[in-house]
Image 1 (cartoon, rainbow, N blue to C red):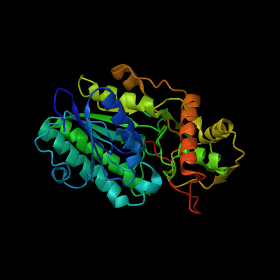
Image 2: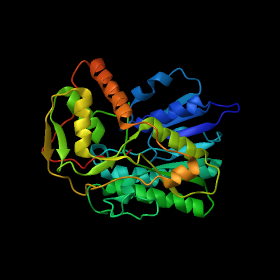
Image 3: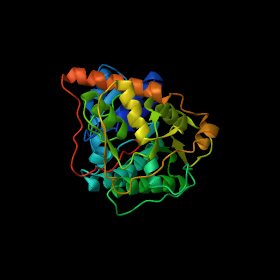
Length: 344
């Protein structure tokens, strides 16, 4: 384990969709990376290509538990701590809502305390879900949100809001140097077929020849950011050396309807699937688009991957997954509509 002159970085949730891409990006810059993951939603196969990488270590454990027990790294001084440790798709975070809330609150507190103890810079992967079903459009970081605190999404939405509260309190009291990213809908390779997010659902249904499911009339809007663009935003924000800017929106400001996304996926896959509608779930946001002015000004960051290019790469990846498994990629359709896709 380390040392030398390279940065030592801890990524909680390092085996997840975003976490595994972040591992790759940091290793490419010469860092030594420790990925911590409970594997409740993360997958070891996302990191299999790093098994022989001498600057990479994988630790299995849950951030809700004391980190000193999990890491046994008391003498190591992390330079950076990334907190990506939370289920981010509705079927997964609703499977154990109590654990989802505890991951956001207790897990964030544990990681903040570790950062304070070793002098590491702390990064919180927050979410556009903290804006709820927004009454302000597009969403600026100054908007406080419109969240149902007792609804089926609350374990995730309110958990992330509480995680931000803890992070800002550590900053205000001078206990940690922090960065906070609010992530809007992100897609790309290594998404799980069963994660319930709109892009993966539609692609998997199209490739399998299943009906493509739209909830409501499909007029609700989302803004989709390709994973490599988002990771670039992460890296820029963590490296930002100015005064703490507060939360920073990271997402693609190009807005389209869910219905338009379905038609785009059908066209690009050549699928003969039908588009079918189901009742709109509770608390489904009607419109979502980030105002990224702060990221542009502070980080010189703007996503550069078009939806067409990003979808082609994502479709190619899911097609490869289907071939490797030698069976159709199918997403379970229940009689009860799930809570709609979350961004991360």
